[in-house]
Amino acid sequence: MKKFATQAIHAGLEPDPTTGAVMTPVYLTSTYAQEAPGKHKGFDYSRTNHPTRQALERNLAALEEGTYGLAFGSGMAATSTVVLSLSAGDHVVCGKDVYGGTNRVFTQVFQRFGLKFSFVNAHQPAEVRGAILPETKLIWLETPSNPLLHITDISEVVEIAHKKKVQMAVDNTFATPALQNPLTLGADLVVHSTTKYLGGHSDVVGGAIVTKNEEWYQKLKFLQNAVGAIPGPLDCFLVLRGIKTLAVRMEKHCGNAQRIAEFLSHHSEVEKVYYPGLPSHPAHIVAKRQMRGFGGMLSFELKGHVDRALNMASSTKVFTLAESLGGVESLIGHPASMTHGSIPKEEREKAGLKDTLLRLSVGIEDVEDLIQDLDQAIKQSAKS
Ligand code: P1T
Image (cartoon, rainbow, N blue to C red; front, side, top):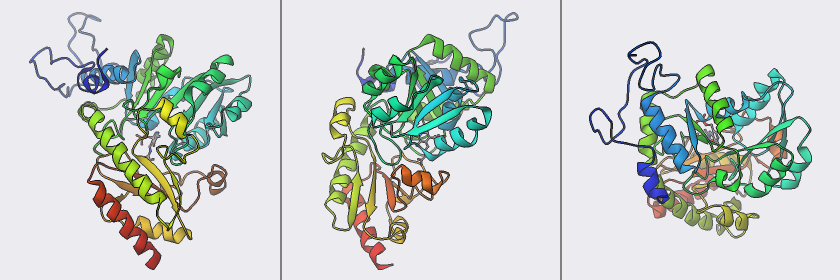
């Protein structure tokens, strides 16, 4: 099998059969001519199957070392489609530290339909084991997690899950397939917000699921078509184009984030830094074993009151204060009021997410400019 950077550019992609176009065309069509009823070239209606989407799905499957890929209109659409495979009465064990929107859709939407969720520290495998009930069907976790960058030993939790005949889904958005492949560590499903590093340029919203398991694929493909949370053709094209540079971008994201994590961890005004690439991270060894790099996301707490953190978030000049992550440009965010604002304060605090936490999506700009920007914003935050 070809190496990752080659796969990212070529896997699943053929020159267009009608014109030879090297770039997969954006097929703007909802329907396809049939020679006779039911006799067609593999495409009959674009919710069911679409050529630009199919190219993206094949590419994603190869990158995650899976067999089947499915693309969705957003990360939340992908997440929701996995949960739609469950039935009323089924139970899910979910990591406490996950994207706020994941917690929101589980507790505020799916719970109303009779599904049950328990939230545990998924990076403590004993907590996962302890939360499994006879009706548990799925374990859901992020590693690294959003926003506290907890690292879960995927193989260890897979073993716990499979012993109890429970399926395991890993949201691999923060790591990307360039750095980590949960399916090769035994996970049943990998989920992505392709809005982030896969798209890579903050210009598209999308999601994906990848699996090796034919039964899972049939179930999810049925739901993708039945429920219809599909991406549009241009969105698929943009994600495919982003993926072509994923390998080089991730190298730079990792290098810049490591430098910034080291800078912040030595800064006298910084209380704590959360980054799996620091030897002080409690699961640095696990991250080193299961990842090929530590990623571009990091979080930290400034010394002092929450107002200081808010001031800093508004004082950067190169980092943009914004939701989302994974684009070429650096972003700063305040999880408690932004990405995780939908989780009640009490729950956030139980999960260790303090109101003083700031999150960085470290981009691929010159790292000296990024460090200088953070330094001036920290100084500025003390004044205001
Ligand atoms: O935004 P969407 O494409 O629907 O993806 C949702 C999602 C799923 N999983 C993880 C780990 C995520 O971080 C997200 C979205 N996160 C943000 C918008 C954010 O700023 O954290």
